[in-house]
Length: 149
Image (cartoon, rainbow, N blue to C red; front, side, top):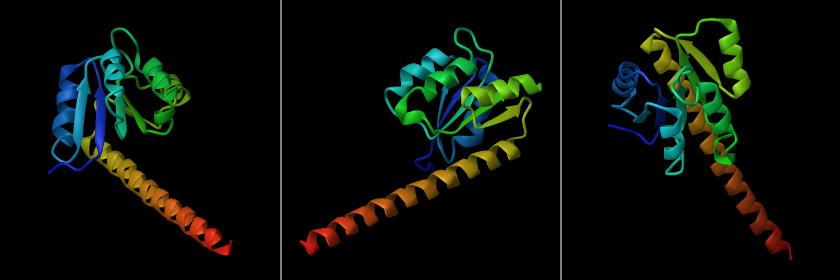
């Protein structure tokens, strides 16, 4: 059974897209893309809750895609996890500088990746709850101030 948490997985290698689809598709909505350009086209149709980005892809690379995602007002805080074969500090730092939240090296542990997704999903749930409470507080404040007149 899928919940409403949506993951966009962008990787030019079919095997990794399939692994991510199988690992997360049963309980979450997973959309996979073979290129950054495919992902960008899909962003207009709806916002995912989390991105997995490869670095090296034909056309736009993962760093560029990450920066382009961050330029969109709706996506400034969406979690982005780079999943790449690059295992050097410079690649990781470039990922963080581009706006990524985390960096996982291929081959990766599905247990670790699931834990990271669970963390970000829980954080989103807590943010959503907080937002509801803020809105309730604002409504209550408006009612109280309205009654003072």
